[in-house]
Image (cartoon, rainbow, N blue to C red):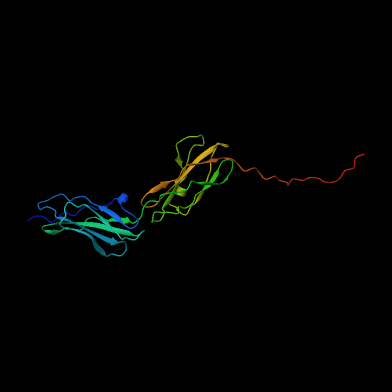
Length: 224
């Protein structure tokens, strides 16, 4: 007796063909066994609902390995899985893919100067107005060597990464007083990352406040 159809692998999402309300789902063909594969069933579950619905019935379309699911909720997460179909019936469900309906953020402004000392620069950044429909997950701040170098190194990721509520940081330990340091910032959500344009900021300390206010003596003097 021929074996039942083999369960498919988890599907994938083609983000270049998805949108804020749709997911373009693709999958691999199941290897042919004793009985040819007749087609595929694509199921969808709204995350947390536990209820699955048939998104695509390709029971008799073995060559179709993609489908555009539309009218989805922006920012929602959906679990997707496949079953293959042959003459003996339907396979067990394949592995699930959990996918959010959103896009990558598309712009973030360059960092801005807040304050500085002889060895530090405090920079800030603005939360992107367009997040792609999903929550922002993390920022990363980068700086060059202050000597005109084109290479950047990441600034203290342990204190900045995975903290999307942070919008400024004091970069310390700088040594090239009077030079320009180049900064850039990246932000990401679950789909992708966007990078700002570089910004040159000079390492310069604010002059010290005079200990005594300026004083001028307007007392008249007599001259003989």
